[in-house]
Image 1 (cartoon, rainbow over the protein chains, first blue to last red):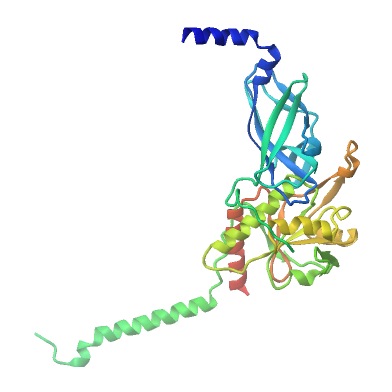
Image 2 (tube, chains in turn green, red):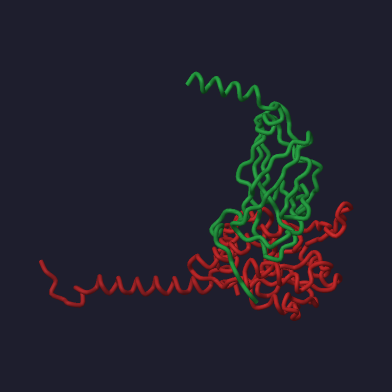
Length: 155
Length: 220
């Protein structure tokens, strides 16, 4: 037990500072909203947790599955639905940021291939300091009665 | 001391029968003339004091068939103004409408199902073919509608709805559109009956729709 603790302490000392920083940012339940097979835009959601002592800013997201990713916020103002492009997604120190339908989300442009529910989507979250957090999201419908049921219709 | 007169013996029963007939008559008469109970609605919906008539318009659906005011007559219609290049709000609204229809169908007693009409706020990109790729994905019966800008404006303004194109300088082909977030309900007279404000809850919308449909039927 003592030797295990010893090696753990040693590991922490040897680990580069950057890795520790990256570890302070963690993602839960990353998913991409399932849509029509021909969809040219999709949306990505997740919850970001920052256990560090500094605010973290995600300034860019890339994905091999999409031509382009933008950071957006959906807002209802005076009864109008607006999408407001964001320079960065800020995760407060010791806090979290939720990317959720009707709020902050990733706008994913031009999927390189049609995506089906259950498909994985690789996302790379780049922070202001150049750190990259790699995330594997799953394509699915938002929760509800038919979350894992897909509908195929051919006209 | 027993009563020997059979007529007297049956009097309580006779009186009871008479009372029952009277009560039944009163009840039927009250049913005939009493106004139906007003719809009990959630705070998610605003019912117009007077359903608003709509002037005719000339649009087309995603099958490229004419879509005019006549298509709103003879059935209830949920109407949503959105666009297919919208990744978050519009798919959410469409899924909410799909689930609302499922909840309407699942509840007793049966009421007629409404049609769902998605009117584009982005006719430049939303051709009938593009609408056909998006709208039926949510439910094969849903209808996508587009047409000339002036005709779309005429319909949307009558339904208190707006669409504003927002240029995206970094990504010009992928401009955004601000659009009214509410879902509108037209009654079988083709008049605007109620407005469902965002956010939408399918179960609440279904219950509100059922109440409005019941009241409309009992009042006509």
